[in-house]
Image (cartoon, rainbow, N blue to C red; front, top):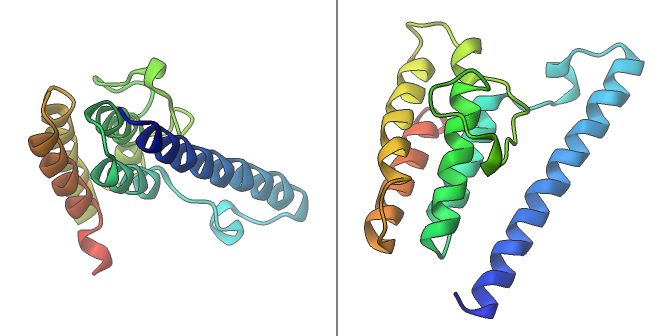
Length: 146
């Protein structure tokens, strides 16, 4: 990996960490103000998974793609999920998007499809197929936003 690519990945991760810290601050503030999470603008695990799928699709190394796809799995399945891997990082704090979505909802179906593809993506070893799978996971998760 080149130094520029490594620096870009570190910057991308730093920005994601900053957003999570900012969200945590909003949660604390909202708790004192008596606001609900939704009113405070707190994002749910599904949206965080979609964000990490986008980061995977933009990543410039197979290792970075794998890491972000694992974050997708961690957020969609949660701490009790079959594919949960705490060592890869857990941007959703153990929360599960699947647990919050009604079983018959379109987002639940999308999340299930994204999980199946992300499982494939983390096993790939070449950039092109890894990138295409990450882009497909992202497209599935943001399908309802278009």
